[in-house]
Length: 531
Image 1 (cartoon, rainbow, N blue to C red):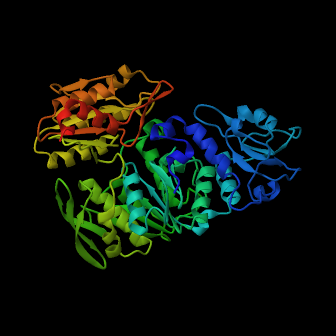
Image 2: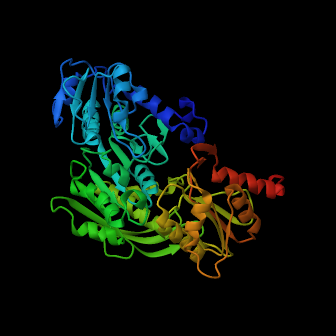
Image 3: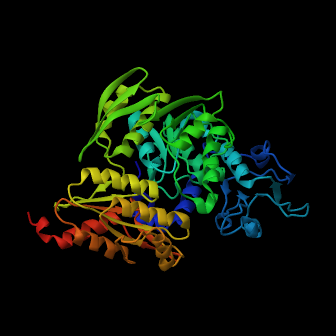
């Protein structure tokens, strides 16, 4: 297995702050495709629907590139229009750097100096060509796609563990990419299609038979998985997020629904749906009749169901039932929402043909997901947890779970990201204020947005008499929360989870909630290190 150091990335911070350079290196290493022969241009784009095209050279294509600065001789350049820039502005640069052809939504004209293909949708074309360039690796893998607002990372890593483990089951997700014999740090939950198919090709070459993939709404909408043959697609839940992109919850739902309706170019063979979620029930009511569907739930009737849920400080117990049997489960995962996550993973595995009893035998060896209710234990007499919760629903459930497990007070540190959906900021604060005893609101990747504006938006969720301390410096906020903690209390540091950086106005700085909390606890309690 190749670790982060093999890619000259000493920490997850370096992975985050060097996303572009890391992506460049990954693309250059994977651009050869599966096998040593580079396909001829004409053969590669032969079946690609086009509005017009100019093909004459039939040169060999060495790599597929979406960034003109990375073009090398033999590259096929895709001019993608983005939110911040437009690849069509850089076509001339791609030509100068040696691209053999351009794929674009514009008509470049008969006098354009090199070959080009004008298409209706360049992202769709990129996915189609990438899949072909890497010799259709999804056909050789049992693809499992997991979508939902909350829980994708936990469910994907649980599923990977329960059906075979990290070396046998590939994974593309928010925290890491497991390619069979190597592991890379993640630079995007659902990468561009060229990266997705490159990684699937490596999984296939490394002997994987299954691949688990987190699929974001952006990934569906931007056709990063277009044409992929998916064996099992799972829907976890839908709560407010990404409204800055989708503009409404209806549009957000339709993007997720597209995965199950064939909008991604093909229909999954099976679907797994959480019917505790109202959007899951809406999805179920409109499923294609040709698709096999399995459901899971805690509160609703479902194929795989949990009942008699009991929450403890170090475990969760429940009665699990499915059509073939039932069993009492003791899970190392804490909280009611993790019962739902476990149900999802078990139902996915069952849909793939695995026995639930066999998967449960593997459950005790599952290690915690980085930054997901991760305990920071330096011997202090109060509990400290770091979690990725960054929506009002996730914060609400996190507070509810910790409230049941905490003898003393619940203290929460959290913030709202900048340059993102402003409408979710007030509900996030409302969720924390209603669930916690002490609240510190602070920074969380402000990006280019003034922190004062973020705080103003959050304050719209304040009711009279609410006691919230707004602290601009996140480390200072964590320090104040730890100072406030008494024996038996619980401090939740929410929003960033596994992330090892903060983004300020185009600058990425080192910042890991877990490291900061551990460092501060040791400074405040030097006696803990003397025993």
